[in-house]
Length: 409
Image (cartoon, rainbow, N blue to C red; front, top):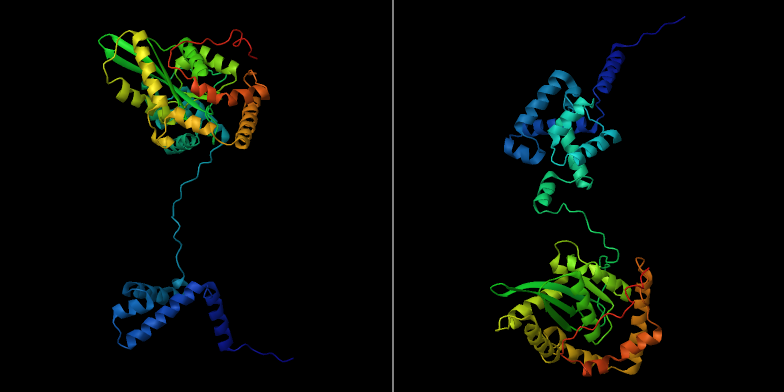
């Protein structure tokens, strides 16, 4: 039998291969660093400065010497990039549903508690977490509107907004995209408090149609829901077009009897969100016009005489005062011009408006309003021209028909 021996060179090559494998010499990062070391060495032998070497190779002088020292001490393993992971890691606390619910409950029961108070209570109950973890959970709950911030709660308390929200059985928010495309599609109503002199204060009711800018107003010594109902009846009697929707703020004068009357008459009632007067911008701007053009003149104190003066101004405003938004026309001139359109176009507008109005009334689920027949709506729409011609400035309170308020669901 013949025996053979493995030569010294073969064993040496095997050990070298093992060391290279252990040093992860095939790592692209290791090979890249080794290439840069050889390139720097060649450039140094060609008398290049370190500034030129740094611009060409991309490593500094300190980095070259550090890599060279690691290669000499550990071989190729020294060129392997070291892990940048921290030696000590914070243990992540998992937010269990029970922990989230308990923190949310504690905060709702104690709206002014901060993270320390809640953390101390949870520690006594056996929960194990840090105070900062409680703070992060509180921030998460506030972001998702599950709890209210302490600052928001205190501000709301100081404003006196902790009153129970009033239930509005009929009024609702104006739907997104709702537009006034015809007279009566949307009428904004608001009240204004004015002081005419020592001890003389009046409540000024204003209403303006967004499409035609037709305006009506009335003055009283108080602003109640009953008086608002009377103002609604005045608006329905004197407006030369049918009213399909009214927009008001959240004042108490637009609740109770006023809301019931809108429901019974099938008039959509839109209420503004809190502290949003800009959404009622047309009537707010009209009230400024009243203050600048009407209430700056000498006026009588008795309400009856003041109302007579106001009716005279309203007649001037609706008949003769030019309006920039209407192309220089007065509101009644603008409405009369609309009536001069062709008969086919008028028929199309009537049918379109009636269908949209009927669909809107069908969607109202809070009550069953008094619906008009197609002929009734057609007649109501066509009498706009005689209504314009017979518009009078006399101030009378036409009452709401008897039994109308009882026709609710």
